[in-house]
Image (cartoon, rainbow, N blue to C red; front, side, top):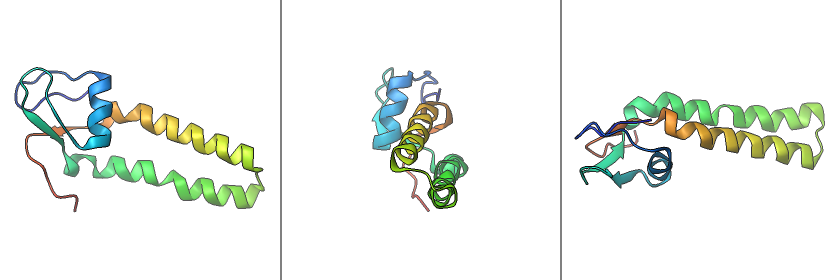
Length: 98
């Protein structure tokens, strides 16, 4: 779980999930606005995106049915969402994406 860069408060899993989707949130302890550290998370973003083309091409190669393809896609999205709190790092300043 990430720590606030201002007061070093360890965020809960729920708060980290919220910042993972909104990109900013106030610290529950010190009320200082925190942002996702883009530079530290660039490699993590690639790990989330990389399996998508593999799954798409696997459907063509292995001739998966639609329910199998959708279940694998749903499983991937579920795992990626569960990993968000463990991969996010926080920053006091908003950084440009690139």
